[in-house]
Length: 221
View 1 (spheres, rainbow, N blue to C red):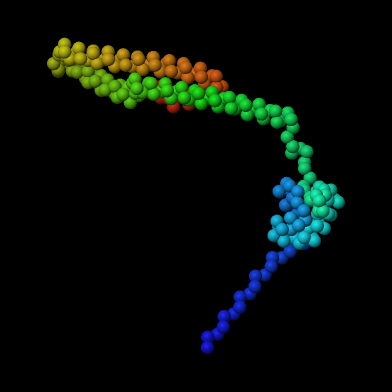
View 2: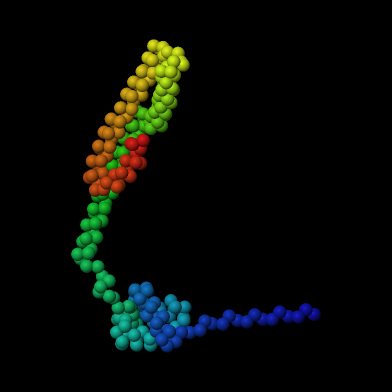
């Protein structure tokens, strides 16, 4: 016959807090929660670590020693931590916070409006002449310039044929084309930045913040 399984031991109840430990537990609880509780509520909220009777006696002792406040609420007494007057906010501080909040809301609205304008301006610039196109054009011009300089050196050394009028006209035409595009880009960038700079002044942005905005727009690329 198989042996019977041993009956599991019943879970032992948690030990009850007594003395100073119980008093500290209750006082810390009232300070942490910062709201009134009765002895019954505190004992239950502490999961009966302090009995109801012990909680009632400790609360009464703490009240008599002016460590907590107590007041009658119907047939029971509720207790709460003593409020520190220094923790309460003054009317002046409240008014200052309200003013700061209003100022921040105003600045936020200005920045949002500026951001919207910048996005629209950037979209216009991109549709006119994108940064990528301009960079590609500059690269092409630099390559062409290097080739022309190489041919010029060869001509001076008498080692290459002369540049034909057609080739010269093509180079001058390309130079004029990209020069116009570069000047147009520069003019647009200047106008955009003047507008953006004024908006940032209205928003109270400093020089460093302006530099970050200018860099993010890629106006110097």
